[in-house]
Picture (cartoon, rainbow, N blue to C red):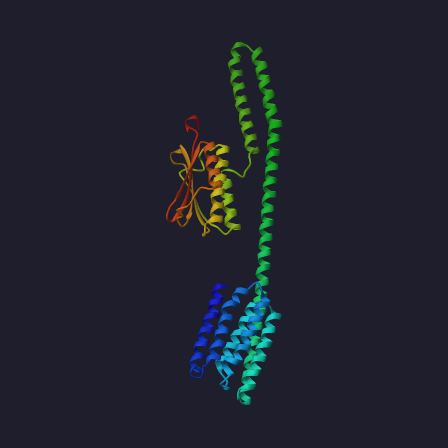
Length: 379
């Protein structure tokens, strides 16, 4: 709206400059007073965008001012008066509704009729003015109709887009719930069938070991250990089925895709140095997920850009590090808010740390977590 006002102001400045040059020799105090009032109204019209009735009144006063400004002394037809009247009609159609713009056009046509009656015009000149006003009004109303249709189509598209996003979020929630229910069902089936049978097998091995011959006890002990390992692996599988899928690196990837689709963010995502193979615990994965989520949310709320870069890496396999950075203007009064403090506390609880770097051209959030020792694992 601000740039549109400057365009209207520039058009008026050009036309009024040419008009002033055309009748500068005949100008008097009444002319200057009328021009001053006209420009005062021109400057205050945008102040009443929330009051269309006042704007309608101001446009009508501007239309009537054209008569004393151009025809109080000189009764010749001025082409610049016609151009200024056309600009007033165009502004009224642009700013006001159809009913209120019709009021302004009616007053403007009355003003034009008075000027034509005062002026000494021939019949062809009167016909030319009538055709000119008819074409101007027709073109402006056609523009208004198209503009309203585009506005309604845009609002309708925005409503449909919002409904699509809502349904997509609902579908995602229901899909995750169905997947989680299925995983829970599979976990219960494994626990109730395989787990119970392995437990019963352990009891039978122990009972058999107590009554077996001395030469068979070692074999029975190995079989019992194998059954215990199988039972432990089964329990780990059940626990993995019961874990939520929303955390961890996979959850971060889904979060990034969701933000790119729904919030029109452009996120550069990089995984380096075996980050996917890092032995993160469930608590550590969830802490990383929440930290990245908080960092991206802060970018959406506080940054003027919609671009970010996310990096995961695990150099040497001893630590896991993530970085979230975006372009930002340096603020010397920056202080950590509740979100960053909570992020720091959550990482410290799982053996990590948080670093905030607010530089001249970027804002960086870097989190580091110590990993478990790999030496205890055997392929």
